[in-house]
Image 1 (cartoon, one colour):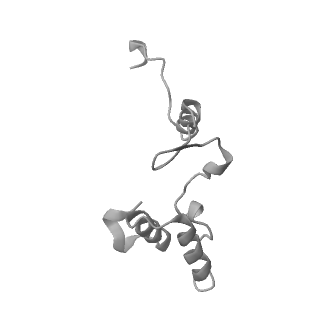
Image 2 (cartoon, rainbow, N blue to C red):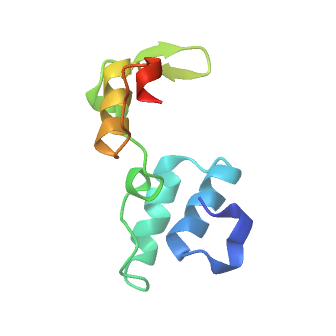
Length: 96
């Protein structure tokens, strides 16, 4: 996000920072996006899209105190790193 350059940020970034800073519930953010859509059609209609948040309802999440826990696994994280262009070396001194 772009909290350091707030004046130069896109509206979606500003809304995202606002929602996170003030702990606005996702259903309230989605409702605001639907209300705003006729006036600002480029905005997403869902808080998950605006906040770039995964929809954990499709995963096996466990309810815990103060929220829920969902383990996405190390392989998902590693795959995203490799897909983004990270090159993994064998770790030997020959690779340096």
